[in-house]
Image 1 (cartoon, rainbow, N blue to C red):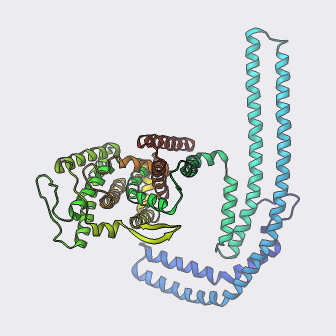
Image 2 (cartoon, helix red, strand yellow):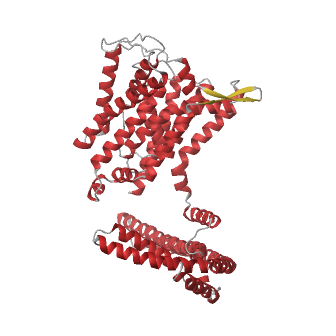
Image 3 (tube, one colour):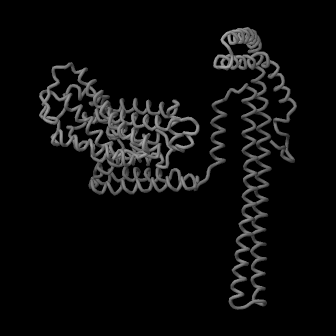
Length: 557
């Protein structure tokens, strides 16, 4: 950092701190630093394809000998190094505190001067321009006068714009200087600890960075929709007791919202990947119906009343319950993956937009289910397994009210963790973002766009299959089960910040979106709002979410 005139020197220039740094380097150079360097050399040598096997063994053996010696030096210097580092950090904290205070004081003074100078400059520019405009009437008249006045006004706007640009640039430099003082302090402490971070310092630095980059317009652009929804929920909570509906914000109501969100979570997690690739999926509802019908047929207690293409009816009660559960889940997943892969193949190979390929899949499944089952509900599933997987655990009594915990929340949490891991901790997840952001650039960099696209469709099919399986635990399944679920899933993802432009979004956003939409529906129902009007609320939220997403995308361009 540049030395700030009139204040103490930067900690980087402090002689005592430089002495601490040199002493620590001397202790580490043949110890911990050499250990890290040799470990890296060993790893690089093992991966190298340019070195023969014999040469590799010799090099690695030599590195290991040096490593053993370096580890001994590191162990011998460890106590002294830790004590010295502790002293150095404490000393850096003491001098950096004074340094930051004086930097802030000086830059604040400079900001006040800049504002005063800018105000005076603007006043002078306006006064000079007005004087020039007043003098034009003595030299011009009619249309010529109007034209000259227009030119002077344009020159005035340009001069004001230039003045503001200079002022803004100077203000940003002052802010940069203040922020850099904090960064230098933390970076120096990390260096003295040999790269080790400190939680308190990291939190402080992140807070400073947030304040430094904070802009009210961007904050409302990023969070305006969530703030509006939050206000809506607060209004519902206040209105519920006044309207005689009771207290909305109770533990049973919260658990009910989470239970209703649980199965829908699978559909949102599936479609989220396709939206990340700048696509969509219109077949979600039909996938749900297919998985639910299969599960209902297999887990029905006794002879089924449904025939499928004149085959059946079936009675699976002779099989053990565990085998029936596994069979229904596996078949549900296989069928959903098969149809999802079918749509994915045409999208990946022939570049057909997912809107079209999944619309075709939706119609195919819809026709097969209704024609095959004649639209007849398959009936309820076995009560024992329904309670075992889809029931509730009794937690106890609170304020005279029985509290139960929905079991369906557990598989939903597992699904969220799996999806989060795939998106954030795997190469496939990183490739999803790359293909969604720019498929051509991803292809040039060696990523198989075909494989990634197919992988996303297959992953979506797995989530749909699991969701369809669990859907049968909620109600009697039929070919019409899941009607409109695709729209709720897509809307939840968009509200959660997964951009239709591709390459932008997080799994956490999809999760929040599902809970928001489910909570919205529950609140409106709790208040007795007509079901048809609920679609109006959802429509406004969706259009607002997409509009904000488009504005953010255009700003980035």
